[in-house]
Length: 265
Image: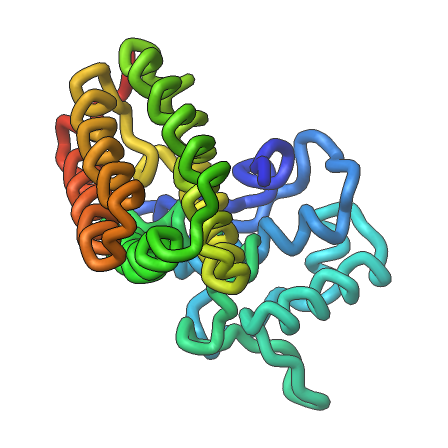
């Protein structure tokens, strides 16, 4: 998902001006192509950022129409989408109010992306890593038992590619994604794989999660990949699960540190 044309132009900034309240909604500087979706993204961002706190009323329909320069039909479509995502609740006679965070659908791409953008303390990203570790370790154990020889050969070939890409971190990151995907496929666990792919795809769009890996970080990650492959080749389910857990958690700690999140120059 991209944020182009839907973010700051529509009042999705995160700052609060000296305690004077949330920044007001602003009109589009550029009119986006998918109007209802853009309105949903802008309002979801304000809700997740706390500019529209739980229990507060969503701006009334005429105000939203004027702010975003859209029709009532577009606004109504956007509000219905927000309600489907669990972000607001519409009641006859009492308007539309923002719901508490526990009602939000965090597996929804818009909600998840907004949550990651405002996760300055890394609380949700820590939780994501825990979920990913639990599911991917289970899939690694299953792959150790169920992987075919072709599966294992494909995983090994990807490891060779990764060895050659440790000095090119951006290429390494993309191949690393394929490497993990091949292990998930080899597990034959479609549900767990779908959950991991869904949340991981959104997490990778934020620098807070991706960090700024260098050659050393890539080398460390690939040493962990090698241990994981060795456990898969040995058909060691327990060892594969442990290797995957250690790899995901250790790699996250490297990215989570201030040095790991340092911007590249």
